View 1: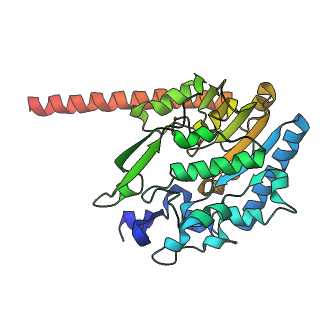
View 2: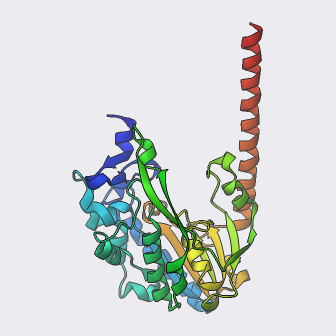
Length: 330
């Protein structure tokens, strides 16, 4: 069995699925055992309830959105049984709430995405992330849950069609390319601040390795909603003009994004947003939440990591040059 076969499943109709890797994806669809059993999901439920109550006490609206794993939405495209999609963490978490999950700010995407999955692709077939249509559907669902007016102009944003090698396609031999439509959502909003972690994230030399603790602020005087939103999220949100963060930046007058699965409550209390949103990809839920996150401390650690990576690269170059000179002299 090849290393590739341990991580990528070739499904029906050219759909590729992540099965292994550091997130142990297929083990997340188990009520007991695995990396996300029901007892672990109870911790997520308790955290979401606590977040909602704390936001209520601060006079802040709150929503939690779990981005479904591709197997959760397109599980019917498995070439052979890998998981039971109906045991998806997002669905099991939905059932753990005592009453209407929306009362605690939980936003369910699974039912709506499954309803649309066969009429249009919502995820890239050769990547783990959703595409522009899936992202827009998630955005509309979140806006409705929060009572925000959608930005109707987003449907007219410019796009580029390209043939690209994405994360799962790159793991195959030979690699598989996919036609991609990349929409530039960001137009009226301006990124007015970003910290050093964002600079490391956007520096090609680090390959996106350094990302947790990224912090960016967007302002938009033309937004249809005059309010301030603080978003804690991951790679589905990001800081680029093409991702979920950009959609929300086009919708509210001020958006603050922090790359973290946990909330920095000290920052929330200082910033005093009108809305707090926590977003996490379903596969990252295997790590239990604690909300003891400190943006300031994380930024310091990530800056040190960047310096160390830079030093390591410099030493590698020096060693390579030394070996080259030694071989020539020999």
